[in-house]
Image (tube, rainbow over the protein chains, first blue to last red):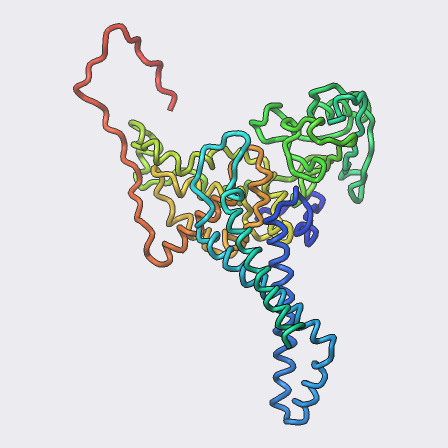
Amino acid sequence: MLESKGHPNRLGIWGWLGGGRWGAERYLYTLHRLTGLGLLAYFLLHIIVTSSRALGQARWTQAMGAVSGPLFKVGEYLVFLAFAFHAINGIRLGIIELGFGVGKPIEPVYPYRTSLDVQRPIAIGVLVLAAVLVVMGTLNFWVLE
Amino acid sequence: MTTPKLTEVSYQIRRFDPERDAAPHWEVYRIPYAPGMTVLEGLWKVKELRSPTLAWRSSCRMGVCGSCGMLINGKPRLACNTQIAELESETVVVAPLPNFDIVRDLVPELAPMFATHQALMPYVIREDVEEREHPTNEFYQSAHELEHYLQFTYCIKCGCCMAACPTFATDALYSGPMPLGQAHRYNSDTRDGGFAARKQVLADEPGPWRCHYAGECSRVCPKGVDPAKAIQLMKRELVLDYLRLHKKKCPAKVAVKPTEAKRRDNIPEAPPRTV
């Protein structure tokens, strides 16, 4: 991209949240990114904890003891919530990014109807599926155990 | 709607003079309000009555030229196409389009966007260069084929989509919705044979794969162009091409002039060709 000599005005991370009228898909976009970062942080922690097995039985037992408190139980539940949303919404993005569910090009006649309106049922379906998964997981985590 | 009862309105404007200011700052102006007034007309009033140094871009005043894109009450819009009444607020908050550097006051630096646009070859590419440069006749194209890209031709390059895109907000390398949407406009034109040439640029890192369908570009587009749809459709074409399932498109042929048709006597001669 061409270099500019003007005053910088890029929104940065704030652009994930503001910068335009908020729509449902923007919330899903932001949540997808945040849950993705959360899952990445979990994977890093997971690798560090499980790698302690290579250092012997004592270190492994010590590491497992360190992550078995109630705080980590809540953390594990948050990881599950992030996974439930990220996985199901990822399927929606996979479908849409292959050009399905966005409709065909149409002549823009005011009030404009965009692909966002066309794919909305998929977005609602995703949220319902994620909610079902969350309810099932919550019962498993806190009630049935 | 209480705004029609207004007699005055406040304009909160983000000002920046590169010769005097180290950073942009906000200034507030009160101006008389008249029903039906657009945000652009209000800016002219501010310039006339309060601050003659206020700078912005505008030209056609009818949502055609795409010059007056700015951030109005938190949303990228055309100032000429936005009535103050529809904002349902006594204060009009105006700032330059985000994600573009500020040249002065409400003037964004759009040159990088146009450079990216140019790099994606937004024109008909054909092997028969002679016919393209010195056309002998029009190309065959059906009404159905026209529908594949007509929606995307309405783009006026105002930059509102780029200002609303959350990916472009954090990723300066991303090409952005306008250039990508326009690349798809030409890729899906049956007169064009430039898919392979554009693919070299599109398949690169800044291409459409950085779009994850936040949809803000389509939501703010003042012309209903729907760049998000264009980008997703383009991704499908790229995937099909990768899987070698992309239909090889033969660019539309030049229409054959009728040789046996006779002109009726009462029809006047056509004016001289302009191209």
